[in-house]
Image (cartoon, rainbow, N blue to C red; front, side):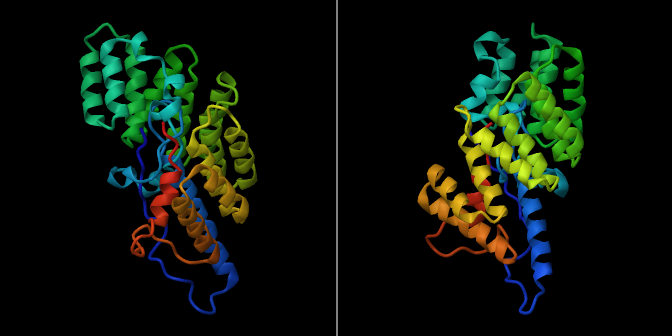
Length: 302
């Protein structure tokens, strides 16, 4: 399943003032691009190391602005089509853990927390519970708690790429891209070329202003057979933010309905033109919300 985090990216949608200096527009665009990339990152902070969701649900979370801006780095528990590959099958784990994961994937985070509390008295190992609690804390936007639990899980058991990737998502969400990139690199050593980890590392690079490296990684991730559609949508975003609008359009149209793809490209064109873009701007009747379209598109099903 796919949860989308919404966040206002900049301010009200208002074209740049007449006579505004080009460097001012460029500066605002860079800020917009960084904000969009961050939103993309936090959107996915949820389970164990898969791509994180998009941006909508974040608006309902109690995380700080800087954390929300990082909304797209994905964590492991909700990777849509790749979640079965990323996480052990529910038939191989204690029923309490399986029930908690099922509720988390369904968006019932409070219910998942309750299942994990009950799991403490079951036959589930402490390490398994700590991992699930860490993934769930990340999903709920409780970044500090997630880092504490995931660090404990990382030190307590065999190396697990899901834990390392989720820890990377937590670091990215709190603005520590250096630590995030170390964690994602460690995850890739255990799961070479895993598209969700490549996706998250690329988005962390984007937050660091390393857009060329981000683009290369997203291209690499998008070629993987198990790549989520959202990874390709993230590639379209990075291409568009880099001014490669024609290629961004091709990638977007190949993975999205035409009206949504058009809305995404329109959104990017307005960012590049220097217009202030707001998710709350009124939209013309019958037209898709460009902000929702692109933000939703950046939600790699965890």
